[in-house]
Amino acid sequence: MSSSLVSPRRVSPSTRRRNLGAVLREVHRDGAVSRTELAERMGVNRSTVLTLIAKLAAAGLVREETSAATGRAGRPPLVVRAESSRVYVLAFDVAVDRVAAARVGLGGAVLERRDAPRRRGQDDLEEVVGVLASFGGALAAAAPPEAECVGVGLSYCGLIRAVDGKVRLAPTLGWTDLDVGPELGRRLGLGLPVAVGNEAHLGALAEQVRGAGAGRENLVYLHGDVGVGGGIIVGGRLLDGDEGYAAELGHMIVNPYDGRPCNCGSRGCLEAEVGEPALLEAAGRAGGPVGREGVRAVVAAAERGDPAARAALDRVGGWLGIGVVNLINLFNPGVVVFGGILSEIYRGAAAVVRDRVTTGGLPVSRERVALRTAALGYDATLAGAAELGFAPLLADPLGVLGVENA
Image (cartoon, rainbow, N blue to C red):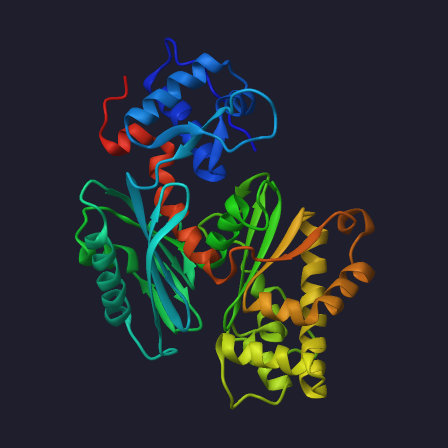
């Protein structure tokens, strides 16, 4: 991916902000980029890039250092790196059975984190926000005095209204119309708004920025928890719909005639056929461990030759493959990424899923698509929340810091 820059001479303040943001995004995403690479990516001369790097370095956002040896003769080139100690964001992830929080530096470095289990469906907004605020307060207090928190992002397992971040519906929790962001912001007391996003949408963004879909313009991300969610990147941009509720891929119907009931009121949804309850019930383990532990136990049993576990994975993998075929035919992605517990299910049923894709997908659409598990693992949604928190800084680096942008 590349960004388009305008020479900083005699440009408007808005153009200058875009230029600085474009450079900072490249460095934030890729970690270490040479001056030459930046100039080539942006399509401008080196003097323009040098001016922008100097402004960002003066604000403490980037630094230049000598790159590692390249094996070529001559002096190693300078590379530009994100300065992770100057600014950070607080990132939070609320899943069905766990909460996580992290202090994340520019460039995506996780500087410190906290995790705690959740009781499924038994806690309320006050309880969840209380845990998050406690984690966030501790993380902020542990930051160096010179470090500045520039954003707060929250990944949430529900339908999130884009305009204000309100949690309109969290089906697996039974919650509706919750102002989680404002309440968490009030409890944190940092004077910053809390940006809230759907967990699968944010997982898709994170995997595209620095995960299994890095550099891909078209990506489908399927996230499994108790339910199944999705995020779709089209032309490098998240497909979020009119109000932010797009890509509820778990409610794509794949088995209309003999399908399992879904908590949305329909039958045969992808979520109902491939989610955690479907796998555990098919394996005869409905009363046993749940969550990651339960799913991993089924996969491990199948690897040991347990026929019930193998049959359960084949069944679930078959329906998952049908869902993937539909998504490939619809969106022609370069990569389909499986996250959350679907990463475990895909590892155990990859052959079945791939067979479905081979026999059911349009040949021209499937021939180059890659099927991958999330490179960021279970932290994809937390990493996505961090990217949400960094968005204002990456749009207007010096403005967010209150630095004169001259």
